Image 1: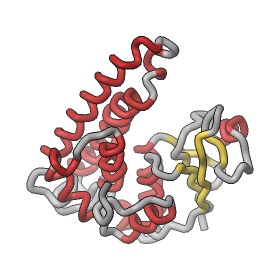
Image 2 (image 1 turned 180 degrees about the vertical axis):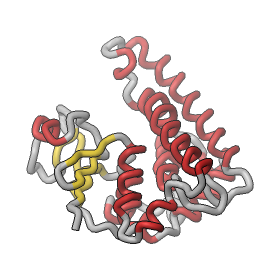
Image 3 (image 1 turned 90 degrees about the vertical axis):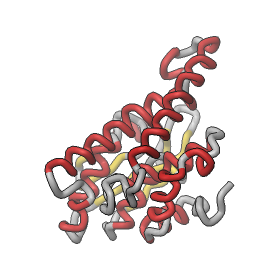
Image 4 (image 1 turned 120 degrees about the horizontal axis):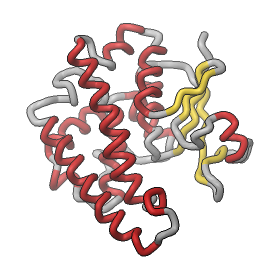
Length: 228
């Protein structure tokens, strides 16, 4: 059996691969992380950030260890997990079935990671990544980042119009959408008032057992059963 290990942090973007591993019934070793003074480190104190860098040079989560190889970056991590499913056909369907569907899944994952996450939430929560220690610029960076976030959510809502999931009636990148919804509320956006198509789709995603297990394991509440 392939040895799989997920380095993740409760409530972080790593909720997506965590939920996907459980959804596909893939056995894995769970390695919870925490944000230390120097960066991510083991939540149980078993290794430092410096030691984590020797495992994952990016220093971030998620990181997926498959035997002796480390896979990082969300699109790659989710793709790898889909290929590891015991039910191979079920796993690969999450990546799309036709050439157009497969291309659309790649588009979704690349845009969510590169734009909504990095430029949007990355800019809002960590403006220093863009302007280093120029504190006087932080406000402008956060303002621009919030515009990216809201535009991104608007785009998602429009693309989900009349659809059960991102690709119509087929579950694909939808695990990757779920944590963004939760993050929206964390930055003060009244999500249910603004994005009805987005809400409708994620209510279905939250019913999936694998996602529910991951949410519980991370000490979170199911959003639509106990909204803020």
